[in-house]
Image 1 (cartoon, rainbow, N blue to C red):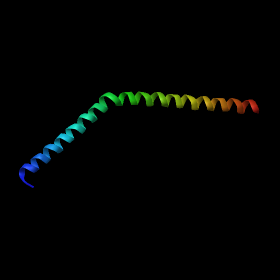
Image 2 (image 1 turned 90 degrees about the vertical axis):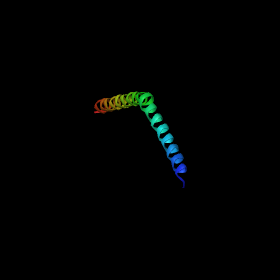
Image 3 (image 1 turned 60 degrees about the vertical axis):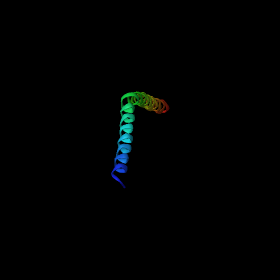
Image 4 (image 1 turned 180 degrees about the horizontal axis):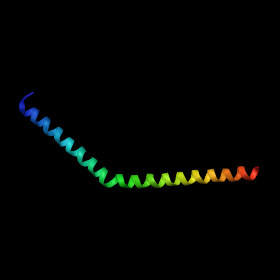
Length: 65
């Protein structure tokens, strides 16, 4: 390869890396907080559902005895 080809390849690699960095920055700044909020809500729903089921089963178990 000639020096010019190496330079073109280096520029292409740098352009791709810059594009990836930009997209990752956009993801972390724009989308990640929304995803975390949805996961938090889902976890709270699962936890409250599990607690409700345990309390309900305990009530049924106590009522049967």
